[in-house]
Image (cartoon, rainbow, N blue to C red; front, side, top):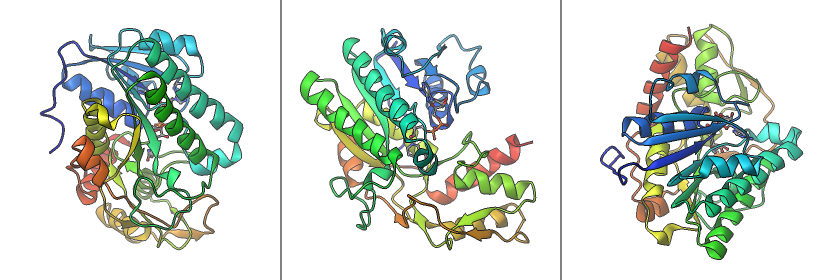
Length: 326
Ligand SMILES: NC(=O)c1ccc[n+]([C@@H]2O[C@H](COP(=O)([O-])OP(=O)(O)OC[C@H]3O[C@@H](n4cnc5c(N)ncnc54)[C@H](O)[C@@H]3O)[C@@H](O)[C@H]2O)c1
């Protein structure tokens, strides 16, 4: 269970792209706690300077301010790295529908640059963030690798293209790539602000401030919300996976199913704000109704055994926001 018992060769160097963001900063923090050397490459477009500064005094941490759309930057960052955890990308389905060209540039070209740099630098494993959105309109539940439907957004397309490059880079060049299809990750440091923020931090922040959250649709849509520690575990286990896992993608979730309206109620109850009712608005384009994951493949091939169920994760997340959103 978990990942704290895992060990890598001494002096291992990890490059975390997007390390100033939500998932990336959690990866950096855990790797540093485990005693490894961590390099973070980020352009601070959606990431935060404070999630870099928090490690500033640690000699095992270094920050490269740079953009993955620039190949030379990627090559310099990969030089001497053993493992790459590629998290840098732009998220949000609705935003990608508004700016498809930008998504193509950052998410596809950026990830391809990183794969190319990792190949040139003989990186041992290239683990990259994919997304449950690659399942598109497939009505099959739970979602299993190999049962993808038609895509619903430019964001989903960028993730699918990266997975195809991941396959090719293993097949053609032997770069050990592993794609992790995250399902609605949540937890400390996820950004609660802005039109494209994820629901859990957004609900928490608005309710803490006594404001009214909006639910798009009827609230009966469901997701496999996944606490960020489980995602950290998946990344570390992917780095240690047998070569047979290379060129493949894996669902990374808890394997549960939570309805949006129930999450709303749990948060309002935990914050003592049951007096605030959500406002319902029309559902958004590109959103799917239900999504939950079959995590058998990751269990079998990566040894992934998520420790944190939804309720535990939500409790920890609420505690963190109460403490940090002052
Ligand atoms: N959070 C989720 O629920 C979720 C679900 C599925 C997939 N993902 C994927 O996980 C990864 C991390 O997501 P997150 O939620 O931590 O998002 P985030 O926005 O908090 O982090 C992304 C980081 O990448 C950086 N970045 C963006 N463009 C860059 C560029 N061109 N060069 C260098 N750095 C750049 C940002 O500044 C930010 O720090 C992304 O690839 C995202 O698509 C996230």
